[in-house]
Image (cartoon, rainbow, N blue to C red; front, side, top):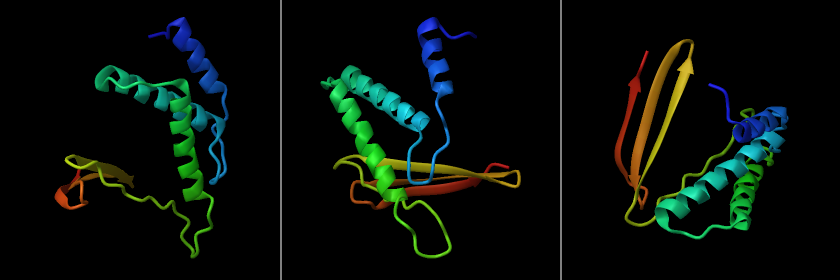
Length: 131
């Protein structure tokens, strides 16, 4: 199905951006997609949560995420394992948070999830070998 002209133009532009980067720097494609994500999230907050959004707030949110990425990836990790450090943040009071992930190794796939409350206590967790 072909893209409409306005979406197609964005699609072609995104394809033209470089997707290569160093570990400590977001590439132009990642930066552009991060901004698109923030615009989409702001739109949903306006529609569903009756919030007020501005272009400045979208770019500020994207900049904060980009800065977090840089902070996590620009420091040298001592030891032989070079990995990204991810810190879990609890949801707001009265909410729960669902984290999930999947893995594929040598044609074997697995999934897992954990549901925690606002204090970080595990409510339910599980995993499954999906073949």
